Length: 306
Ligand SMILES: [Zn+2]
Image (cartoon, rainbow, N blue to C red; front, side):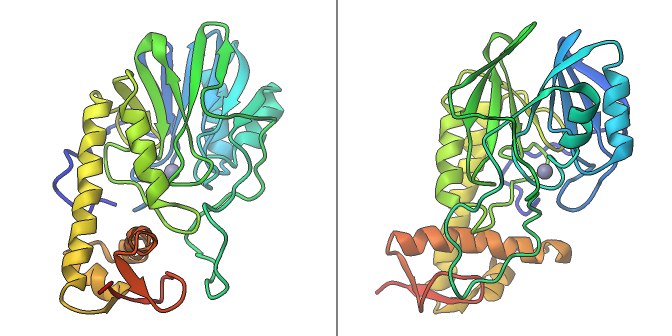
């Protein structure tokens, strides 16, 4: 969500759907025509390598986008399909690409929540989970995925989803970071699928690596990735401080906090903003800084611990 000006966002991304852009040697990107307040101009799929390639994030259930990807690799061999996470704008097209190419699908695992659902908690209809997805090969952090002409290292980056993976290409100084880090906006961290504690730890893990150039699931590349991640970390720390400042004036529910913190927010993003606040509150409750009656849920009322 583009909700703050303290991060140096870049929303300049003129790529048009279905156009194949070779953005670096061995890195092509193809935009899917699924723009929205959550996906910016749409999902960006990547083709990694040349002649023998991996396709990263085949995108939503879209025949047109699958065709654009398959046209882009005509005459080449697709040996790998890599999936950063199981949201409906990233993974459902995997089946089409797999059927057409016979490639092996690599991802952390099927969709799962970051924690067990509380009894009082309803399913978040905006979570956008692709519950039909399952990889051929389940990957863990530090695994090496090698094709002819590319050697990628997996970096577990839970937080946006529990199964989110980044793929580093150390020889090229590149990381494919999915929706964990995006140049156009902050990422949505919505419990129970997402977790703020995991997300912050994943930012640290990524920023500690050497790769500088990040390619995201939406929007333009990020030239100084680790530096940009530092801005994101500070942004979340500032958001947490805003929540505590609001609670210092008395108990509040989440809509009240959203109105106090997200000034001028796009109304379509209000629900997502509420879940982001919940992600912070969940962490604050776990640390004993904030209390609530019962489990920390979206409908709860929160106050500072005395
Ligand atoms: Zn996405």
